[in-house]
Image 1: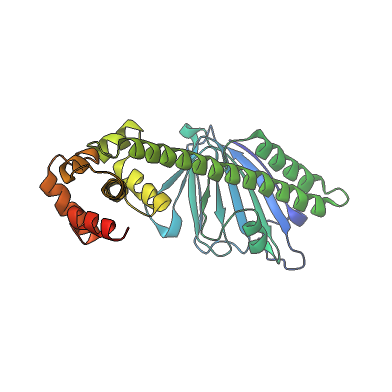
Image 2: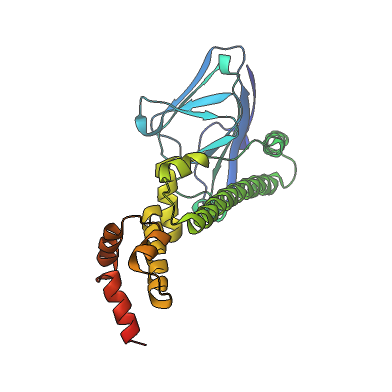
Length: 288
């Protein structure tokens, strides 16, 4: 096992310091490859914050005193807040490599929020980056050497880490938004082009590699209606336009908008518009 760590004032005792907005108390790294396991259990937590970066392998975290582990793989971070119970285990056969930093200060919560680390977050999708490793190693080095102005430099390094993490979180959110917007626009285009066909929502979602529930939920958020409601609205709107502007009979209009059975078309139209297609046409003509 490889271990390298450093502590402010060479003290392993955790502390709370409100004299500055952000204070780095300790940092270090573990790389487990010879010992079978390395457990950590702090039932009462610590007085400071802790951020852990899984650089390789995986780690097993037990949140809320649960006996079921949350497996956190490489390219993710975990944050613990003051007095939050801590229990996690590294296993040698998983080649776990972890970097960690403890920090405190008078404005930590607001600083974290500024960089996109919200109060509810525990596991953070940081992505894998050698820049994270570089910053952690530099913090360890600074805290070991204690050169002039090292406390300020440690704070700057930690903020640099937060900035890189925030960029990753922002990019991840943007990628998700771009994918979602693209898929919803493609769905709208397809539904508008084929609204009068017998569309299977299940088959469409499958053709785009999406689960039906995910597609329906996100379509509703995007359009404020379900896919079937959207298709029905397209059919009724176009039926109204044909009734107002053409001489097609009711059966023909029903067929054009996707209903082969004129009685069913009339029943659906009445349910949606409060009157039959013929009544709607008469009303439209009377209003001209």
